Length: 306
Image: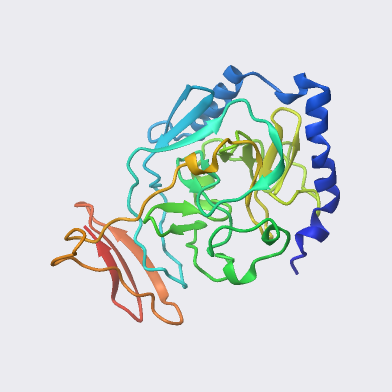
């Protein structure tokens, strides 16, 4: 049973609403540590997890820029039933900006694209696949758009979206298995508002009680002011931003690939049509020449990209 957010998060939400007042009364409370320390924390989260070879972090103009190709080394797309027929491809020089002086806002912010990035450089979306959620949507489980329940995700918690970029919608289990510092204390990602993302438990290993997380799946933190968590029930992971980010339109978004052959698609291969009722035994492969394909029943080759 999944409770409505109004039932699960009413008490923490009221507590979180007091934080802007605390920030106004006690300005020093606004930053649990300075910009330089925050930069070092972002860099350390990537390095300690073992992803420094594929993810780069530079700090400039008040932000930590996490750069990657969004293409992880773990299993991709395998296990999806409700396929959208998108094949994951690297997104060259994807740059995720993480605020270094995070400040909690008063209103949750949503978008129909990434809300943050994992420490392996893969974008993190909310759990839905039906476009941007309204503030009212956040209060209720969007069952019809739940990418996990509708079997749109692979065994690692992700899939390729409309931009052909691979991203997570729930806890990135395969990435966590790859992390050298895997554990409750390890940061698994960063939201664009500058707050860290942890796993299902508190960093000290204690469990998180039902109703302890707010509508964005987060809670206050002694070091970072605030933090997000994954969870076994919806929304599974961050579903909105509680901090300030400036203009949401400036946050990164991966554009869809154009079909081979250019705008007129002369001689090119058009995108596939998702099979009605889903597929079975979908597997994704990539050969040494970079040719990517997905094979499933009832179709043979669902779609391929060279």
